[in-house]
Amino acid sequence: MQLIDKEELTTLVENSEGRCVSLFMPMTREPDKQDENRIRLKNLIKEARTRLTAQDANLRVADVQRLLQPAEELLENGRVWVDDGVGLAVFLAPNFTQSYTLPLDFEELVVVGKRFHIKPLLPLFSRNNRFYILALSQNEVRLFRATPYSIDEVELETLPTSMAEVLRYEDPEKQLQHHTSRKVSGATNQRGAPVFHGHEVGSEKKDAIRRYFREVDAGLQNLLANEEAPLVLAAVSYLIPIYRDANTYSHVLEKGIPGNPEEVKPEELQQRAWEVVQPLFAEAQSEAAERYRQLANSDQASNDVAEIVPAAYYGRVDTLFTSLNRQQWGTFNRETGEVTLHVEPGPDDRDLLDVAAVRTFLNGGTVYAVDADEIPGGAILSALFRY
Image (cartoon, rainbow, N blue to C red; front, side, top):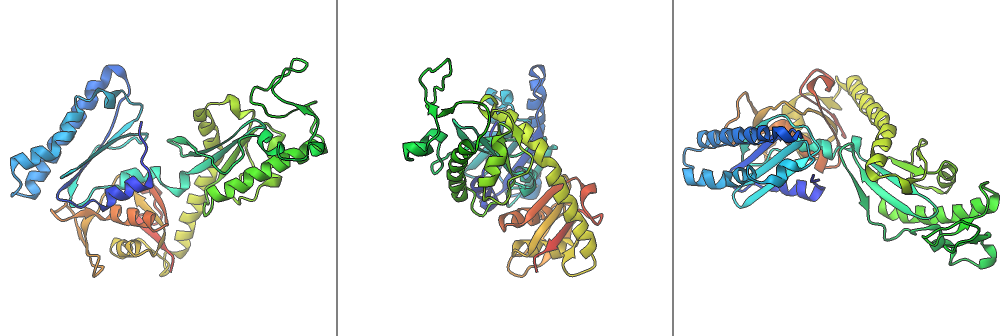
């Protein structure tokens, strides 16, 4: 399964070379139903061919075939169909091809236009589902960046990797009694970290751990500068309050994941952390919707597509609710800000909901790409403005 970073997303957004084809489809993971995936993609390619021909009568058959050929090659690419993603996204343009198997259960969709259709990808980037996990033990520090769909480990260059690394630079007289990785009375630590005698957490031991955690926190300040994503602590129970005492990051959650994280796979940490943060994200979305309802009759909010699209493009939109599975076709003139709406897509049309959502995201706003019935105001698009 692949993931898309913000740089790749920006590349897709900015591509405007010739006709752009965007294909989205769900994928069954059942081994005996892989032919269903190929049939579904084959049908989407057929639909794309029809739309390309209908939109531009000057397109030669050979040009259409050349554009769609990389998608047809996926039909015979065995790796695509055995990946563990649940959705396939394919982007085709002259001299550009990219496909992703993703943890998003797409609805079938074909969009042909002057730019790629990006909105179905936005749940991967929404601020309301991104979080961090700090896995702490005396022997090891790991930081994970996660969403409901993915988890990846962040490379740590400015953080100590263990308590031993911090304490070895201190005056030996200030250190507590401990032993290292040599076998002493049956106790071992193959990582070379200090192992303290006894199970109780005395004041001296707490002080040593707190010094270690302050070093960890100092390194995190560089990594998480300007971040607002929640941070979930994963550690044995007695370490969690000690770390909170040393912590200066504003978004560490009160509830953590108790237990030794060295013994837990990243995917399990992700699942357990999501159970902690999901109610907070749901509450934030609910509060944003209520704020919209309170401001709906003011100039601080709108559900008018023609007003929201230019506002999003020029960075005025703070929070946007958009329908994930519906489209509003039309055109947007960047120079004049003029918006025209169409029922059916024309050769120069784009999904204006896609324009608003992508530009809000790239301009640092919050995007809730949701089902239509979750959008406050009963429209397919609603926005709260910065000014």
